[in-house]
Length: 284
Length: 251
Image (tube, rainbow over all chains, first blue to last red; front, top):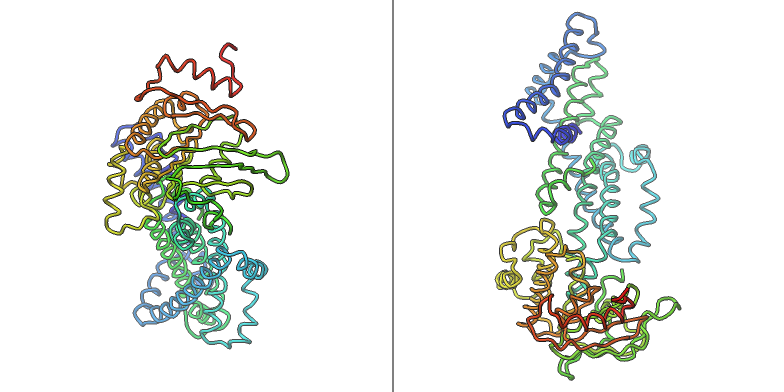
């Protein structure tokens, strides 16, 4: 993710701290500028190539065209309606995944019997490519909302389950011993030691789940749908409207970025107890 | 998940014998090897400070784990007061709870909890760090917090498992003074597991040296308090203890 790489750049530039404050500021400003310069230049080249006819608009629309199409799609209501439908599908699917993933991980993480019953089937199922289930889901649930939401839910349940389960299992046994010597009941131990200890892993799982939910949605909406961003893009294909397709791509990108930021914010708030350098090194 | 079960029921709460700690014929072995604890007898009177010394593998930690209820009693009898507390070598504070919340963890007290935590933290010289996150504490501060967490339970029997081993020399001296002061005020029975002969001489009423799961030396330390590290009377006692530990002064 661009944000992480940006942070890393700032991090490696640490020796700069010994310089005078204004010199450091100038250097950091130049760093930021340089980072944004190359995308801007690429965008310019793209625009020029389209304007001069070097690049056919049948292959790819020009940036200005994409912006104006995006604007008109917002105005005639096409984009907001389709975006709303897509968001609803993603949020519903993700909510189901969170409930199912957390529930199953608690069962498997907190009791041996639960682990024996739950873990093996889930480990087998997670090796299946969920997208290969699309034909079966259409046969079972038709082409309404159900198969799309379920596809999102199924795909994002696994990262939630796997990470939380791992988190619960890898609680420091020394802390569990400490809880015993303090006379904590099993309920208190789960509430005060196990769950908060597994929270960082759960949040990593949620971050993966959010990413996967968009992936599932793209496929679900493009295979058969009569609404949603994916449908809007497939529709545009029939009319060779590369501008609309690119607007859809842009929206998907934006959705991914925003949802990732939300989870990040959640992490910073819920894991405030971690020292700052610890938080930086988290996997994306 | 066997790690979160209640302490074994076969430790008898010592309410009838005025809160002393008694160990009789305690034997503990792991998978048919030689016994880690071998028919061990030990009594700690109420309010007595006992230091437990021994080389690595002598059974010190196993004895402490058994007394704290972490390990089961398979052979022999153990009785101890109901209210006990343990301080380990690592502070074992929950990183996701603020220091004061760690102190009163598992305590039923409601609103008064915060205040109570503040008092005990003040007593160990950590009053200003109550709202801090544990991972921001230094090693010495963490151990002070761990001591506060033990004291807030008003234990009749306090177990210290090499509590200062991971601290630097200066911090260790300060912590030893702190423990001496706390013990003078609270007068609970203490079992201090340590590698440090001077620490034992500085703090304890009695030093017990374990070897191969048996008590090799049980040495009273009849010195007045407060004691100082440079006390000339330490010399004789130190050489007895070092001798029992297999280290000879004249080497």
